[in-house]
Length: 191
Image 1 (cartoon, rainbow, N blue to C red):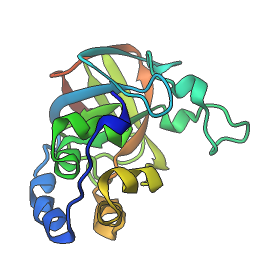
Image 2: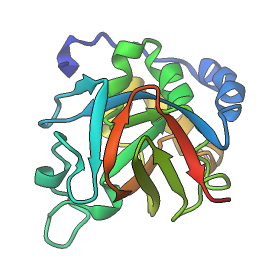
Image 3: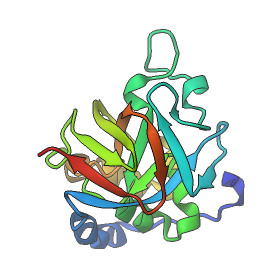
Image 4: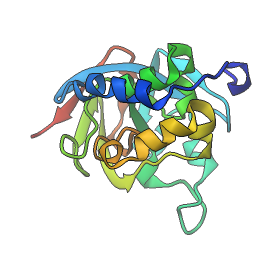
């Protein structure tokens, strides 16, 4: 999938606000893994039905390990942002069509409540045989997000409500390696 092949249109503020009640009804304890997206190179996306989450590599086949991060002192990969997760209901609202979901740049799309109240830092999610841990480092919107989904969408996810619900998603790290498949249940581990 190439970003340039995706037609873009953006929702207005009223349309975004109208979608908030549906997002708030995301399951708290468990929800399906709706999409797995590998990013083999910058601006490239590969939607796959199965993947492997690895404690060292993140999502196997993704460029996280080799891409590096401006947020680390040495420019290497950021272990706090090994795998990013976005709420399926939020990206469905913004993208308006499932073939545009990968443009968000997140590797996993899950129908689960990602709010800090529901999944505080260090909370864990099991998916298939793998386990992810929610990082303290927030996942924030950027210019690319605004370009793909609109400046109103960036404002929407950046409001106090959007931040509390973690509408932009969460950063995670893999703490138990294992295979995952679209349709697997992502389950909050512990209480």
